[in-house]
Length: 624
Image 1 (cartoon, rainbow, N blue to C red):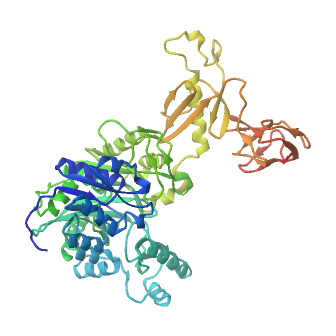
Image 2: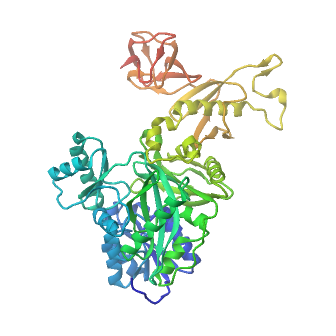
């Protein structure tokens, strides 16, 4: 660690995209710096591009040809006159070759030096360094012999279950849990392939797998003047496939002794490699034991929760340290509690598959909540990169208060046009183990499909709320003209017809709808319902309009479980496009399946009153 003179930084290029690029720009502008964005062809109209003073193209959509192209990024830095580059996280943020390219060009890299990055970038070497520095590590094996036979032998020595991990990179890529010797060959093949594609390095190491651990990390920062300090810890246990979803600071339920050991070990880890700038030392925690996992030599996605409880700006600290300034005084204790929830463009009901599209409606919560966003209403969400759309950060006097704030903020968030994990985030804030601070890294996977109620059930409740809203009297109108079915003898059911994009519904509803606290907006031609993080848009169907979605030719199957109310056709009947075939009742709604074209009815498989499963054949149609 060599002390250097402070030099002002005037033009900052952010070698990243999305919310982190926008977040870095906010601090840079506040400090009077000129900001430069880079973008691929997929991001030409992205928010981070619109937010910068200057924006330069670095290549086509694939990350390897744009955001990961060191030559292209350095060319943009030279063209823009940048005297500093902030890498954000992901992409080139932990690439020592990129740091050296900045050094060679005389451009300040806002992060650690190449040597420290290399030392911590390879997990096998990092573990050896940590052992030498007295930092506890998970028992395992890291070595040069990468043959299947050698790995199988070492796996037998360590015992099962164990973890196969790529020696390079992070983010859960190149990582597989192995519970028996029989599973090892397939796990090695998968981890190596993923590591080679993600990091260009297919080497792996083996670690004992700790069942149901917590993931606790310590924020550290060091300057060029010999100061290295910790900024307390965060709990990042709520993960799916090793990707964090909700984080908090400080970590709940740690004993003072364990907390102090983790803080001390993190500082020793950073000092062992001569670290400068901000970094995070991650630990696996089980009971009173904590073992070194890895060091992320960059700013973390979840850094805002640390900022919230300490009242600091970590990006400002990063920029000042990179400019050669000494660290400011550290706050002595965290103030209150903070949570961060990551809003991803992904479908939690379909294995969290990434989703794209255009953001048609976007409403952020009001009040004391910080939003670090990558999109605005009308923006197009691409699937070429990370699915993170935004982070919602809240801060309260206690953990309970902060968690309540987070739930309220999520419930007040509305996004349409892109499928997101918003409903899953709401469900997690209500989970009893999360409420009690009993999180483990396997909690989300353990919940599985039970984390969210069935989509059909949510749709039923939303339809009833939509119907109730349509039946409600006009506040300024004649109560006797209300269409809510109220009679002197009591409230009767009224059938309301609504349409979804792929089906039309006949809803039996009174004026109260289903349980819950939704937001319902009625317009001239549609009703929108937002409830528990999910949105439904129902078109208003006039009386006499054709009901329900058309069925396709071939086998006509039940779109959901239900009961057959009526079979409208018989075997051998000829039908025209739009003719009713079968009426189902499901979730208290009628669904009429219609012919998708002219033809003849083949075999009819069901009869009135029969209950059917989703996907069960009802009848067959022969085109004609």
